[in-house]
Length: 249
Image 1 (cartoon, helix red, strand yellow):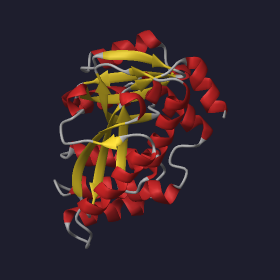
Image 2 (cartoon, rainbow, N blue to C red):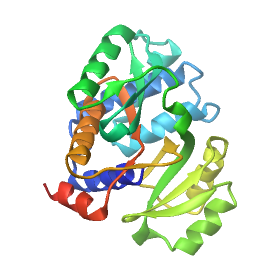
Image 3 (cartoon, rainbow, N blue to C red):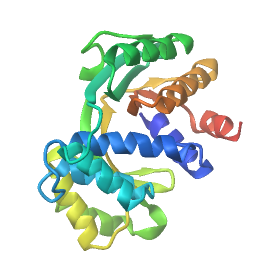
Image 4 (cartoon, rainbow, N blue to C red):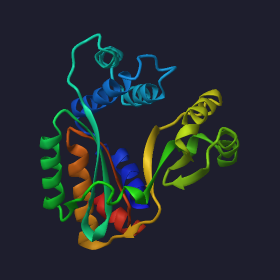
């Protein structure tokens, strides 16, 4: 996971994640629509607040957010999206999870299966790798904006379980049921977050090098570029030297 997290940070700085803003907005709109089906008030619907926060951090226009909420609550017509978790294996036996929102399960399953196979992996059966991951709330805070001791003090009292250094950021981890409390604590302390999300974290990682690492990153990019894929998590790691080489390339 360290490798995936580090790569994400590098990619963000290079502007290589979600390069097509329209595609990103489309994914976020789906997330809002699905969340808003459980209620249109973000104060009472944590999933909706989380989706709206993500959209705002991505600079999604307010009217687009409001339109997506209305689609979710039924005020406007929309497609029906299913939430699906696809599981599989990448190069080197890396476990891969894809969080999906789709209006056509059969189409999406076929397309995702082909992406796995094209990049040296295979789509697995339900439950084949999900057991390796724990769902957590994760917040990224720029190191230059906060003292580590101060950050510890703020978030641990709110229910966070750890603060980890990841490149230029601190990552605050918490159980899903503490997500709202940690969010409120950071807002009260006026600590800005670079990202705030739920992520599946693996219990262990597979070390990759050479061609396997390159192919794995190509698989990640291909999956993340798919319109129906909301998030991809994989349990690989790689050396800092290889990470720097691949980022430079």
